Length: 504
Image (tube, rainbow, N blue to C red; front, side):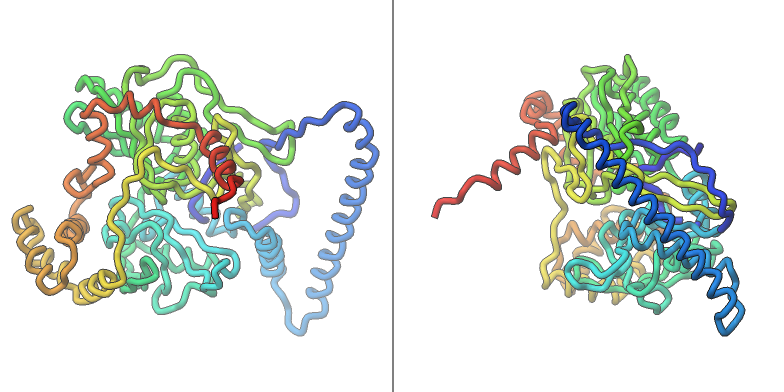
């Protein structure tokens, strides 16, 4: 059986016989004995009615399928009808994480989860219908994958892809979007990006062979810095290698960077927590079937000693499996969270094969050790540290700067520009585009990274990383940990605050 996925990048014909692996979990409902016994006949009757209705609908679908085959004005490929019906059923769930996976999509999924593929290096999502605010359902970038064309082009979490090769994305399905973004390495794809509803600019990306990355690590003085990029079967082993390396340098703290980590395999996330937690609950999953409820516990002994302080960095691109790790370490009082509220994906998907095709479906929701589901809510950091927001005036200046192509032209002429040369050019740009100097320097440095391997960290510009180092170096970690609260406590406080009447 394939391992359950907490998040899988998008990916999907055929055999009517369906052999499914054992699924997952279920919500537990505790009833008093008398009520339970009294309810059994009615529940069974309801079950029989539902089953009868399901059989009736299945018969109708088969009848219509056969009718179209015999009576439609032109001959119809049964595979096309089959795929259309399957896609329609999953679209009816109104769940962006459940979908039919055609043969090519299934191959893409396997490549993304296990190995590599040709593409631009972006984790994306797309609403299944109109957004609540009435705006078109454009493709949203959940997170860029480091050292890929999308990352090197400066595409950020939260950016909207408005067009692909001149075609609007609002009317495209996720499968159609993936078909346009992925393809043969070396071929170009042109995107129109919208940022913060204010900035719009074109980006031309050259597809590359995207190797699914797992970790990066380095020492920052006497602290181990471990960045988890995604959760694959290899992530745990790479993390163990990192911690072994930290040990040889006598590390005195760990910064676990989960920013822009959009998820991966559930078991991988549990394994990472096992490095830091000594026994106890890591995460639980619950579905409609009580017998499939599962609680994942950490094993005895940890790889990282209990006296080693841990800071976890999160942002809006931290989702699913990375939220499991952040939530477990927070609820168990093992780490201090710095950054921004996470994405908020608290559901679990399972992938099932159908011959060469398949489907993925949400089978459960997961809960942190304090029994909180963060779906569509996210995990708040213990200390919020954000990057500067753009004003409308800044957005206009930045849009003009991007479209003028000044920064790419400078780096093309000065690929090995030093910090001093970058600062001088930033001052020059500031005269024409009066934006913050630090922002301009960061934009120039990011452009420089497009033509070289990205550094493991960029301490000069990363204010969230700076704050994490400051806490560990300043000796305030212990006192700060005394102020942290579980997600359950935070949730209960929020409910109480909503119920408190306001003075008039």
